[in-house]
Amino acid sequence: MESELEMTDETALQNLYDRAAAAHMQPLWVNTKGYVPREPAPAIVTAHWPADTSIPLLRRAGEIVSSEFADRRVLVCNNPALPPFSPTTQTLYACIQLLLPGEKAAPHRHSQNALRFILQGEGADTIVNDKPVRLRRGDVVITPAWAWHGHVNTSNNDMVWIDGLDNAVLKLFDATFFELPPHTGEIANEVVGPANTGFDPDWHFKWHDTETLLREQQASGDPDAAHGCRRRLLDPKTNSDPLPTIAAHMTLLPEGFRGQSYRSSDSVIYVVMSGEGRTTCEGEVIDWKEGDIFTIPTWKRYSHQASSEAVLFSISDRAAQEKLRCWREQRGDGPVQIFGLSG
Ligand SMILES: [Fe+2]
Image 1 (cartoon, rainbow, N blue to C red):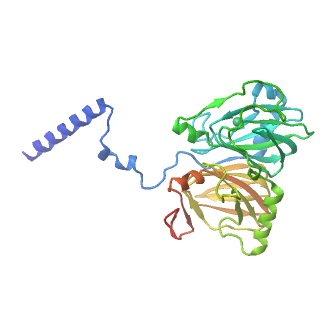
Image 2 (cartoon, rainbow, N blue to C red):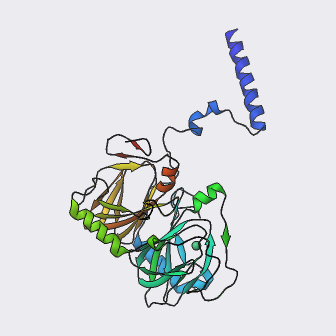
Image 3 (tube, rainbow, N blue to C red):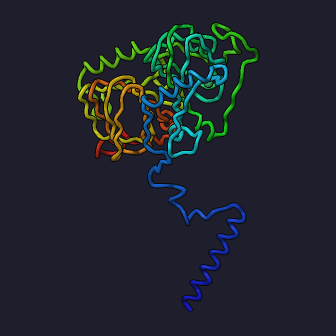
């Protein structure tokens, strides 16, 4: 009798589930952990794009793909766990761009936030809302959402830089907009449209200034146990990230640095500006050097070592996570610190 009742219950339940599925509804209780996981389960993997591979590919593109043809001569770092044309992490894109002497990239604007980190070269300009910004190695330039931007290289130097963008965030919101200027022509110093999104000179983080601050930090005492000497690139007027979604850091690891294990809820994209070292992420070893790009998935424990003095640029979605009050970090086996809740 008891088994008949169970059978009846099972039949009734299955009938309920079938009717719910037909109505495009799912019972939460059969997969609660699927809807509300206890911890992050990142779809992306730790990945490494060595300069030995990426730069020759970019140079080859420079030989056979004109900037007019490509508009932007860019190779996107596609996380290997995701389908083609996917981002580098689940939220951000890292792209490597080549602009040769005499070339330009025509202006446009979009709802994605962007920044550029200059890896090689000096003398080209990025033009943000009609304001030319001279680019030098180590500089970071912010291009906020809906700001007009184009690039022109009037120097004799090849320019290689990393574009960081929050495209996947905008795709999540399905709020992607893109626009070309109402007319075409030379972009240098030309008004290409209404400058309705301000560009602040403070949003050009010059390497000379950043290095000075990192050296001061280095001279003032012991480096951070996990991150060495590190500066978050903040708007000095507001002391906040210039972009609402992307946090950017510059890190100086002294020669011989061996960092403490660390994890945080933001997946991070690192770009090696100079030096050599190793980052270990839960058993995976990344031996990196100048020009390499690598990524650490959310909530994975990792640690840095530097065999020579090294400078790393990094971006993550920490800025957005702090606004959403979901960002957290843990140093070694210490307590988990939750943004906005921890002392
Ligand atoms: Fe753009």
